[in-house]
Image (cartoon, rainbow, N blue to C red; front, side):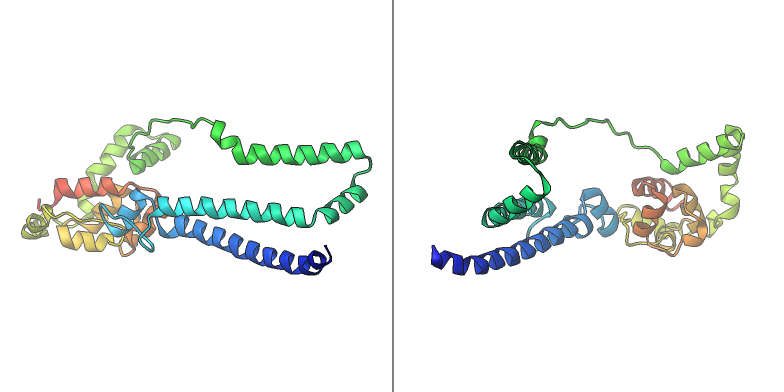
Amino acid sequence: MENWCKIKPRVNLIIDFIMLLDMMALAGIGFLIKYVLLPGYKASEVYGNNSDLFFWGLDRHQWGAIHLYVALFLVFLLLLHIIFHWDMVVCILKKMVHGKTARIVVLLAAGLISIILALGPFFLKPEVRQMERVHQHRRHTETIIQDQGHSQDQLQNQEQLLPQVTANPEERSSDSGRNHFDELDIDGTMSLNEISEKFGIGAGELAFVIGVPADKADERLGRLKKVYGFDINDLREYVKRNAGK
């Protein structure tokens, strides 16, 4: 027993140090999953179609499993920490909560809440929603026009005026459009100017399609999407229909 009293502070210090490393790993893996190993649709927009992201040969789902194991290990270390400091916990609790019954209620409540937070997800049912692809720019434009008291005809007139502010179709390189039509590759690393040059469609016209100001044509699509929330697939479909015309 005397030997344990001597080594107990060292054991506590080691446990605390391991807990610190474990918590930092927990945060780092979370950042990795959130900001580096992007989900499928975001990865396609930034790195191109059918892109799968890996780190050390593991994808975001496998790193998610590791994240869970690291979290469980942290819970184990926390329990050890509480056990080794139980005398101190009881001493402080006696000073904060008077009465044995009250202290028991507090401990049971803390334990019950902890169990609910940890195991509650196993008893939850997800909320299922049927998602429909919507052209966000068109919906946003229609909402603005309706709020201003304009009619739908003015929106159509605005779209009819589009060719007047875009490049002359006769000046587009039809050969360029035909050469790239079958190998259409538009991703978040490209700018509207690059797409315009590659497929022979005016940058202003492309900007209008996705609801982006024409002066943003030099910025990458991935960055623009975060600000304007358009669907990059709408841009791909428009280019497919109009490339080389």
